[in-house]
Image (cartoon, rainbow, N blue to C red; front, side):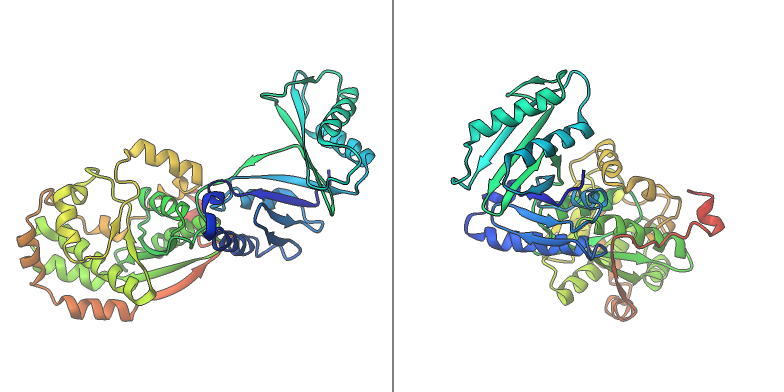
Length: 405
């Protein structure tokens, strides 16, 4: 079947009242960015639907991208027909040939905004249903819960027909809830937290701390590849890499072992806040889940959050590891996250970190280092790149990657 367009429905987005135009325009621009490598495809966001016109492009890779874009509730591949009922019969039968299996049920549902069309909705439902039944006598009609629903939409500019409704990612278009800065490690939790924040409309920029030579280029590439997976929901994401070697070496030299992790996290948060203030971020996001590791107890969170008044949002805070892994598998980050390239937190983790650090002691130990100087040098050496869907940062030709894939 040669489809002419994909019709997108908004779902939760449609509840936004007077602000709906801004949400729809944002969804349209996000969709255009996500489909940037399909030059023949045109996107037309309207108040009731968004139309993705294919202009001869194969719909399969387009629909694969649309499944990931936040703000889309459902979508359907559609054929635009001339306003003749015989054309509807033929298209309905051709569509059903691609999907029908013995014992299936179906129904026909019609909308008719063009009231001058010669047949009303009941007549179209009846006649199209009869044509399909004659072509596939093993089918039965089920108007309440059919396996296949043929949708016929009669408009001024033609008749649009589809018989497949595909679930989208839901949520709100990225960018409608302000900008956030995600503290992205190479682990399982933080990409899931980023995904959940983006689903609620947050325009997320990724902050990644790396410590060469203690962490490798492969570890940095893994985090970029995780960002590439997440970028498929929006079209592009800024990746901010902040060098952390000098800071970690200084902390390890001057801070008591039990407080190494606490002071490191305080510096990471300070740097993330500084970057947010510089780039218009409104909140810091991370992948902390309560009680999962030593730095994620209530006492640790309090000792770390002490360095800022900016909101620190933890989308996975109440999830257990099994729940987080399930989401990671669903969004395609899990296999990347478990690749054995350690991040800077793992490399410098003390054998016995404080699970209940004292806030006053954390402040005192932080005073042993030149916080302002260390931050100034780290921020000056920061690199920012734009990561887009389809970019490859893990080179499978290299031996170290070939062994892991």
